[in-house]
Amino acid sequence: MLGRRSLARVERQQLCDAALAVGPDAPTLCGDWDVRDLLAHLLVRERSPLGAAGIQVAPLSPLTDRAMDRATSREFPALVEAVRKARTPLALPLVDDVVNTLEFFVHHEDIRRAQPGWAPRALSRAEESALWTAIKVGGRGLVRPAAVPVTIRRADGGATAVLRGGADPVVLTGLPSEIVLFLFGRRQTRGLSLTGPDTVIAALRAADLGL
Figure (cartoon, rainbow, N blue to C red):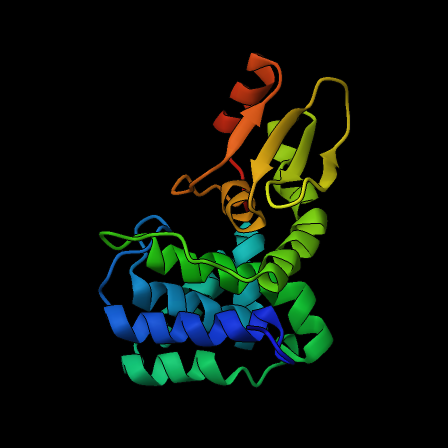
């Protein structure tokens, strides 16, 4: 239940709990990164402005590499605690909702769904709605590499949102949580359906989605 806490805050805490439960060397869905690397990424993103810039700007990537090296050299419990405390401008309430809701949900699932025997969580209606609100905006950039029209539809109510306009779109239907993961390039999803022209569906499936 969210109560007065934002989903971003809930997911941050649960991600940290999951990291401690599986340990620093456990795999994630983020390529070759293990859990330690993923936590280091989150810390650099929030606490190292120059290091964070290198995540998006290739010429600055050496700064990111150095910041990641410093973060991964920490004792693992201290690294997790640094991410958990969230004493950065990105964790301010209004900024947190906009910037961190999708980030921490996706990376929490990157830990969970890389482990044997994973199963989808049963999120509350309020949690699914928070993800829906976030992906209606964030998803527009995520589908750009596909260069095809995309509409998303909630399986738990039928609400729709156009992420990229155009005739004969692919319609991606599912729970908001699963739609989010698909649009971030994760293929460990459940209960999604894609309808529309075969060529458009194929282009979306083949695209390098995510950030």
